[in-house]
Length: 426
Image (cartoon, rainbow, N blue to C red; front, side):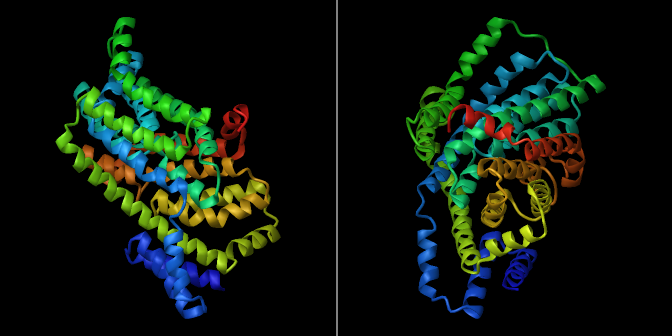
């Protein structure tokens, strides 16, 4: 009964248009002060201790690194390199956009930053070259979602914090699925382009490819630095985030010189503002998790689901449906912070690997970023393309269908997610 009251209250507040963070906090306070004897001091204490987690420090650093790289010309150089490699295929510039999104996702950790950085360059170029605007928007909107799955990922850090799972192991688990999804989105792009005979570019020679690679090498090296550093044990994921931020600053200010020193404070302030918003959501989500635990709700849900006779296969199907529905009303960070502490104990009881479950949640979040009404990538792409949300929603359908097929693959073939961590002995 308590669980029903809590969720009705939460959903009611969300439906009023109240921000997720405030809805969470207000739900907790209302329930605690009216239906329990929990002292107010414990709530205040939980607000402070909720952020006392070393892994959480990775979030502002990754956001800062992404903000610096978005301002700089790193994305432009990556796009040029990708174009020299695949530009001669059908829909070459669109394929270069998919590859660039995967590469930029691996250095920014943010889906929105990826859409902004790559989309603002590739989309106008595609329209100029003769591609339909809908096609270009569909490619970049969905490919930008790779920022959630390809490590380092801010949403992965949130899952790790919520479930006490290894961030490093989760990052490694995202590599193969990330590459697979990028390949599947690329194949979908090529198939549509070939079917409609969309423009191709002149094939670049190896000298041009080498020069393009050298020009973008400083950007690529961030990927090696972060992933290599974590795997080798040189530094933790949180330390890797700090190194990435410092390295990104060095590259965009002193190497590429795309960002002047006088503009750095504005970039830092923007990153701080986004970090503060996320940390505020995390704090309230920690409070919500505390309420769930104190009322024993996750354990009760686990018992109820077990009594229904749901095995791992049926449970994962229910989880996918639940998360896809949640994606209609909430953004990824909030979904992970609310749903992970509730669903994770049930998954653990059914013997589902926590890393596999984490990757499954990330793929669900990717799909949620690309469909209305609150798909963040749709709104970002809408701002770049000047297209309406309904028009964009139709444009992304072929790639969205591909992502749903990939979601089923990730759901029922755990080794796709677990192969690399297992191979690396993690």
